[in-house]
Image 1: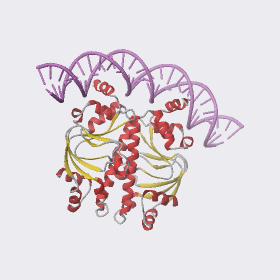
Image 2: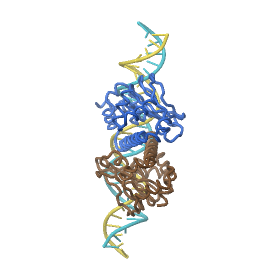
Image 3: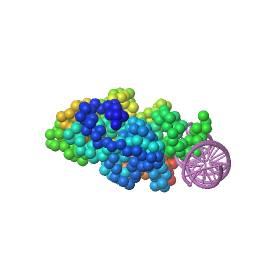
Length: 188
Length: 188
DNA sequence: ACATTCGCTTAACCTAGGTTAAGAAACTGT
DNA sequence: ACAGTTTCTTAACCTAGGTTAAGCGAATGT
C-alpha cells in the first residue's frame, strides 16, 4: 500500500483525505505466473496497481497469433484501459509473466468519486494523457525505426527485463519473429 | 460555432452555461493550404476545432523524412496534444492540406476553468481517453497488418480523403513508400 | 501559352524480415 | 534422474517493401 501512495505522490498532489479515500478502494491480490488479470471478450472494470512482478498486455489477431503491446513493471497502474473507458468488450489480455503482487480496485467505484473528489478525476485525466503520450511515442517508433533500433530502445526502457522473460515475448513486442530477434542478437 | 456546440453535445452533457463559457474561448481563424497550425520545437498550447478542410499531423525522423501520424477531418479537435499535456517541446507538426476553417482556444485558459467547471475537466479526460483508444487501435494495426490491409482501413476511415490529398501523404500515413502504395493500388 | 515543378507509375535491383524446419540447450514434472 | 516439453539458434528459402531513377501527365506560376 505504501508503494501505491508513493507512486500517487509522483502523479498528483492529493490531500491526506483524498489519498485515504482513493487507496481504501484497493485490495491486495497475489497472482501466479501465467494467471490472467484481464481476458479478451470480457467487460473489465478493474484497475490494478502492480507492486511486484512482470505483466504483459497482448492481443490475438484473427489467425490467433499473439502480439505483446506492453510490459508492466512496478510501480505501474495496470488496466484494460480502452475497455474500461469505452465500456466495450475488452480486446486485450493482461497476463502475469512472473508471480505478481497487485492491488485491485473497481474502476466504477473510482469513477463514482469524481463528483465529490474532483482531484481523483484529475488523476484519471493525467493517467489518460500520460498513456496517450506513451502510445504516441511507440507509434512513431513503430513507423520510423528498424527492428534493431526498437530492440535497443526496449532494452533501455525495460532494463533487466530481457533476462526475466522469454525472447519470443520480446520479439512479439518488437513486432518481429523470434527468428529475426535471434538474428539481430547474433550480430552482437 | 454551431458545429462546435453540436460536436460537444456528442461528447458530454454540458449545461447552457458550461457550453457558453467553453465556447467563448474560441475564435475563428482561416488557414491556407500548407499553413501550419503547430510546428515542432515550439511550445504549443492551442486547441483547435476543425470545422472545414483537412489537416495532417506529422513528424520528421533524424534524416528529415516526414511521417504522417493522423489526418484530421471535420468535426474534430486538433492539437499538439502530447506537447500541451506534458509541457514539453512539440515533436510534431500540424499542417493544412487544404484551406481550413478552425476555431482556436488557448489551452491554458481551458485548464484554468477546471476548478470552477469540473465538467470541462471531464471533457479533457474524455478526449484523452478517446485519443488513447484510437492510438491503441492504430498501434495494433501497425504491428499486425500488412500495408495493403492498412490501406483498406484507411479508405474506410477516411472516405473521400483519397481524392483530396496526395498519394505520398497516404503512403506516409501507412508507413510505406509512395512506390509501394502505387504497387498496391496497381493490383486493383 | 509555356516552362517548370509536382505527383504518379513502373522497372531494376536490393534488404529486412517472414516461414519452416531441425538441432542444441535449458527447464519441468514426476 | 529421465523423459518430455520449451526455448533459442541457425540455415534455406521466399516475399514485402525499400531505393533509385526514368518517363509521363497534370497542375501551377508568370
